[in-house]
Length: 42
Image 1 (cartoon, rainbow, N blue to C red):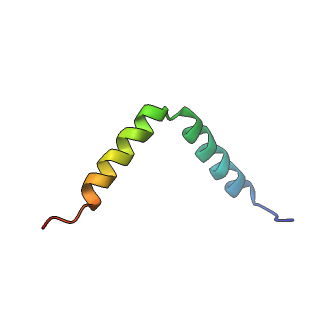
Image 2 (image 1 turned 30 degrees about the vertical axis):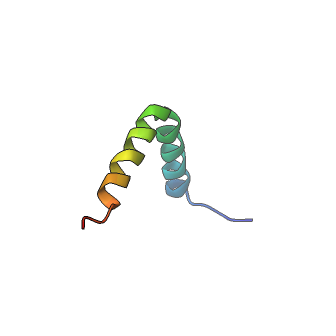
């Protein structure tokens, strides 16, 4: 079992709330943007 401090619990909770608020379309857009940035330009 892992023991977390109050700060760690608050951070994890904030991350989970933020992820829950992200819409799938926004995630898809972000993936497209990241993929464009990672393509090698020859």
